[in-house]
Image 1 (spheres, each protein chain N blue to C red):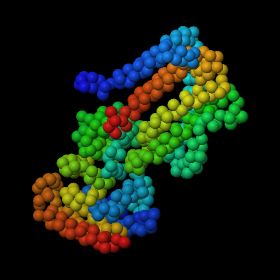
Image 2 (cartoon, rainbow over the protein chains, first blue to last red):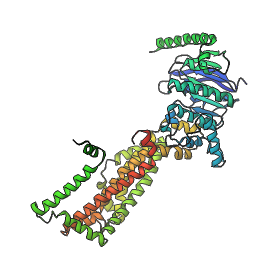
Image 3 (cartoon, rainbow over the protein chains, first blue to last red):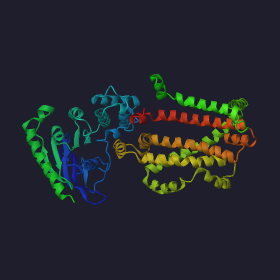
Length: 263
Length: 261
C-alpha cells in the first residue's frame, strides 16, 4: 500500500526565469493516510499539489496513482481550494453547487442526485442551507460547501490546498475536527497543504516539510499521536510539543537559509 | 428643515418628478406669455398633437417601425457579439487574432459607416439594420471577452477537477460568470442602437420616429415634432427600465454578493 500515490522525482521550473521552484521531490502516500505538506511561503507546495491533481504539468518527474501516471484531473481525486469564494460559484445555490459535482458524473435521475447531495450537505453540517446562496453564508460554511461538493463525487483522495487558512481561528478549529471525522468515516486519503505547523501536526499522521526555494524535502516525520485528536489535550501532549519544537527549528533554519540565498 | 420633508427628499425621487412638472409648467407659461413663436408651441398644444397622433395610430406605426429595425440590428449584434466575445475570451489564439481588429474598428463612430453602407447596401431597410448592427456590436464583443478573461483561474481549475467538458464549462461557468459584464455591454448597445435607428431614419426612410420628427419639422408641424421627441424620450426610458429589471433578475447574485442592494 506504500505506493498508492507516488510522487516521483518531481521538479517544477518557473517558465519566466527558469529557476526551479522545487526539485527532486519524492514521497509516497499510503491508502487511507493523512499526510500534511508544509513549507515556507513561495516554496511551491501549492504548485506541487496542483501537479498532483493533474491541474498543472511538472517540468520533470511524474505522479503515479496505483502505478498509473497522472496527466489530468482524475475522478477519484478531488481538490479543495483555498479560495472558497471563487471555487464555490456565487450564481448557484448551495445545492446547485454540490449538484454540479455529480450531475455530469452519473445518469441517475435528478431527484436521486439531489438526495446524494443533501446527504453530503448533512455530513458537513449544512442540511438546513441547501437553497441559500454562497454570499448568505459565512466563510467557514462556504468551505463546507466545497468539501460537500468534493465528497459527493465519492473520491478516494482529497487534495487540500490551505483550505482553512482564510478562516478565523474558531472556524478553523471546527473545520479541522470535521475533516478528521470525515477522514475516518469515509476512509479517505488526504494530502493537506498548509503553512501552519500546528495545523499540520494536529491533523496528520505524517508531516512532510519542504525547504525554501528551490525546495526539496527537508523533513519527513511520523506524528506519534493517536486519534481521535482533541484540540486542547492533543496540543499539550509532550510528544506533540517535542515534535513541534523540532520542526519549528527546522522551519526557521529553512527560512533563514532562504534569506541568505536570496539575490 | 422638517424631518419628514428631508426624508422624502432623500428616499424618493419625488423632487425629480416635481422638477420635470415645473419645467413643463415654465414652458407652458413662457409659450403663452413670453415667446409667442410657432417654433415654441405650448405644452398643451403639443399634448393635443401627441394625442391626435396616438389616436389615429400614426405614432404607433412609426414607433413599431423604429422598434422593429432597432431590434433586428441589436438582436443580431447581441447574438454575434456574445458568440464572438465568448470565443475570444476563452480561446487565447482567437483573442490574439481578433483583438487588434476590434481595437481598430471600435473607435469608428457608428454614423461614419453610413456613407459606406449606402454604397454597398443601398438606402433601404437593410442599410439601417446593418448600421445599427455595426454600431451595437463592439460594446457587446468587448464587454463579453473582458468578462470571460477576468474569470479567476481557480474557477476554471474547479471546473476541471469536477470533470466538466468545454461545453459544460461554458454553460456552468463561463456564461454565468461573464453575464454581469455581457449585460453591461448589452445595455450600452441598447442605447446606441436607438440612436443609430433614429439617425438612419432621418437620413433616408419613409417610416420610423426619426422620419416622423424630421418630416414634422420640414412641414412646419412643430407640435408634432415635439410630440415625436416626447415619444422617443418615453420609449428610450421604457427600454432602459425594462432592461434593468431583466438584468437585475438575471444577475441578482452578482449585485447581492458585491453588496449593491
